[in-house]
Length: 357
Image (cartoon, rainbow, N blue to C red; front, side, top):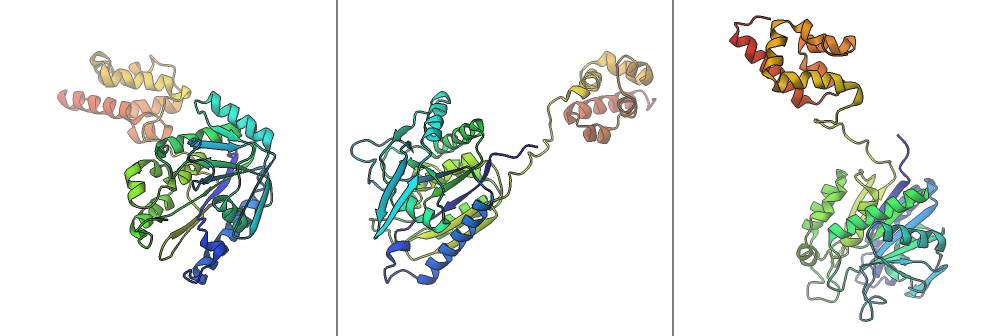
């Protein structure tokens, strides 16, 4: 199995209080968030990525009343910004970014691109906490201004994004910034939905990242999780993989969730009902005849060896077919439904004939 070029990723919070540190903020909570992000950053840098993709929402700063694209890629050589007295400046791999935009166009997506969008705290805080100094490719997601992209569309965009960097052959880390539950500027600011957030995290712990597409727009809004759209983009890029770090640090106004991925994706599970392997095609043909053709069933019951001799089978396949060994069929990787039906029909016919073999 070749190594997936999406080598790791993270989902991290970006609350402005991490930098402004008002008296209402618990300093121990802030420190825990910083510490886990720093640890995740070290592990991600150890993977030696060639590209850092940073996915964040815009806080109605740049993509709002003039133009609100669902997805925007930065293609400028440098991305700058500032917040709470801190300046941000990151190199942007423009050639790579343009190549990804072109690839996304061919894949059925039409993202916007910008040469001048700023780095606000949604990007600057997680980049600072991670300790990233390498060039980064910012991706902006419209989370705050309706109509926003659905989580299904965000996930599909992440899949297309990952496919683009795979075609470019780049070892890539994907980081999403945002969430979890919070209601800035509303009367629910002090009521983050911790119960909902923990249920979301419990599912993500199992590696079921695709679960994020199951949340309707109304549910995201009701639970203060409109920024999970950014997580859904990262989930699409990362695929189904179990996180190595999951940490929840709730505050009175915001649930800070930190998730890190350093291990490769799980091997694809062996399906109960597999495709027909070329080496099993002849055995499948022999069994299919026993599953659905009464003449073949009678021929097998009358003389199993003569029936088996009709087919070009290996010694192991001949033996399994003569024994109608369903366990052996499964071990070989044969489609179990065919073996099951063939076995059932042969057993039934033999029973009708008094158990004769």
